[in-house]
Amino acid sequence: MQQLINQIRYRKATFDDAKIIKSLLVHAFKNNEGLFLPLKPTEHNATVFYMTEIRPIIINDDPCLIAFDGEREVALSCCSTGVNNAYDLTKRIALGGITVTKKQYRRQGIADQLRKVMLSLLKEKGIDFVLSDISKSNTSSEKGCKKIAEEKSLFFNEISVKYECEI
Image 1 (cartoon, rainbow, N blue to C red):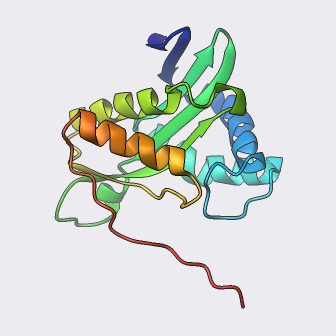
Image 2: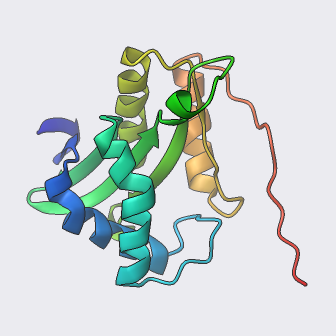
């Protein structure tokens, strides 16, 4: 494990971490971590999300980082480059998967630090751009991403808005 911030350490996730990742996902679903899908905090949803979103990231050796406070998992951040294999794109991109921080560890810079590590790992993979959905209610994530972009002199651009319409 590597030092992240203060006493928090991190490492890349492996298949052996499925239980830890699912636990963090249920936590995210309980606390609505800015997800655009109204997912219930169930083991079933955590398993489906893990199998369809996280596991392919691990298979592709893309950045999927877990942060720990001692032995306790406190955060997760993942990004996928698989879209580059599926489509003929004009530029190499990564798609933001999910970033989760347990409530008691929020506002300590953990998610920002994980994102910085992830950006370095993506750059090493030849990725030029990251596309990510940030829920309008998740102002902390948006501020954190903008802060990283400013610190690293990166171009940050809002390119779309998602809408929901009750019918």
